[in-house]
Length: 315
Image (cartoon, rainbow, N blue to C red; front, side):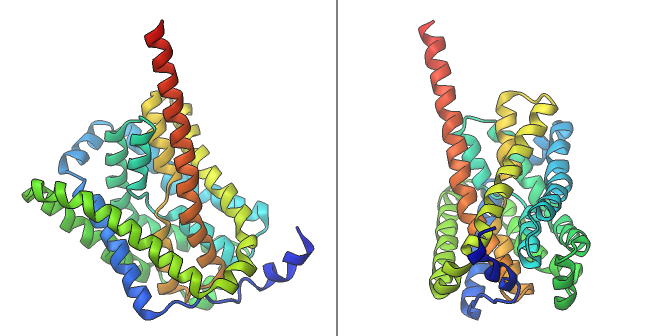
């Protein structure tokens, strides 16, 4: 490790990221809007599609809620990161996918129907699985458990927050999509993009208000987030290949496992962890880097497919 970073690594557990109450309320509204947008694009038929492909959905569920948190735990031990950074990585790994995974799957010419159904199932399961996963893996971590003990985090408290932020917007969105599909179709084209712009604005404002801390400490989490994001994408790709899914389904699985709703993680950091430095930095930087890496992979797949089709047409 670079010598100049050693004092920062030691200190990252003690710093707090300033986040005003008004900004936290805005973040809650934005995350709720993102989930509302996902639900507007979800139909009850998507769950029926999932029921007709139980094996594939089960593979995705195992990868997202069992394997990714476990592998993340192992990565934090391998990198020997501080407790707050380890908890940030575990928290992000336990987050559900967002509809960015659907957009990237579409861009990569993957199985969008599978992606949408997996996103719907994943967000419903995350209401219960996420708080239990965070509490379980965090309590096992040699340095992270001390942070959890200081905060006295309750899995049930987190469950109620996630149910509020995910459950209510999701139910409302699906209900509107069911009763007024035309309204849902039009609103879905606006709500999702606006919500993501809002999330980006909240992150930018948060970084600007804590610019000196960001500059001093971002180097502590850059490598960890890069490796963690690569691990998540490779897990989705690897498990799809290992179970011999078709190429289009492999692309969907890659993004469903690799793309996490880090905005939700950021909300929980400020709600329950008092803006704990390492956790906030991991969640914020993951939310930025995950999209950059996802777009790069999607574009590579899209270009590869276009080239292959051109070759087949020429032949």
